[in-house]
Structures are given as structure tokens and as C-alpha cells.
Length: 172
Figure (cartoon, rainbow, N blue to C red):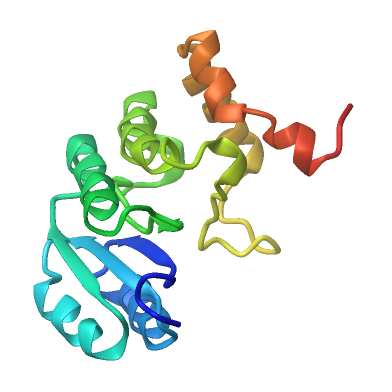
């Protein structure tokens, strides 16, 4: 894979853990890694040796404007973003039942810039909670999601849901 054809992959929280390991692996396969986190410069230098290129954008990814800057820097430098791996977390260190609507709103503001370049149809959201051993009620999550979207305009809802259910569940 040459550097102009390499997948351009933005990875948040890339300075440690799963995101760092993913960045290393994808770079070894030839992907171009765009890394966003507090401390990523040395990792970017290392990955440039493995694959075509890497770009470090040291940012505080708890600010929506900085997440947008990360995506914009990737597009400006490489012309496009093919994949966005958003592994950043802002969840307060408390049981899910104590979370407030404002907590979810802050989280939504962080992933919104990640969805905008692709559209909801091309995004996948996952969790590290095993589906066979839920740590909480999915009904509670669904109820919270409904409350969050209740304050959104029809246009924002269209952008969030944009045909995803229709396509995934083959609804007519």
C-alpha cells in the first residue's frame, strides 16, 4: 500500500491502551494514522517508521472544538478521512444511574464532530460492555437517549438517524 492510497484513520485517545495498540497495528499494515490525545508526538514519530505517515494532534479531546480541529487537521494534511476511531471517554466516574442529562449532552458534543464528516449512515457506536453480561439496563440507556434527542431539532434528529435504522433493519 503506498502512502497516497493508504487508509487515513483518525484515532482519539491514542496515547495509551486500546487506541495506541490499534494505531500501532493499523500503521504496521500501512494505514496513515492521525492521532489525537494529550501525549502523542513520540508515538507519531514511531509510527511514521512503520507505515506511510502519521500525524500527531495533541489536544484535550474533552472539548468539542478540539475534536473538530483534529478531524480538520487530518483532512487538511491528507485530503480525506476514511475511518474515525473515537475511543475518547468523558464518562464521570460514577454509577450509570447517577449520570445526569448534562453528562450525556457533554458526551454527545464530543462525538458530534466525529459523525459530521461521515454522516450517521457510515458510523458505528460500540461499547466495551459485553452484550451477554450487561452492567446496566439497556432500557435505561434507551430512555436517556430519547431524552437527549427530545431536545434536538427535527433536522438534528434527521442527521443522527439519517436512514440508519431503515438500512440496518431493512425497513420500507
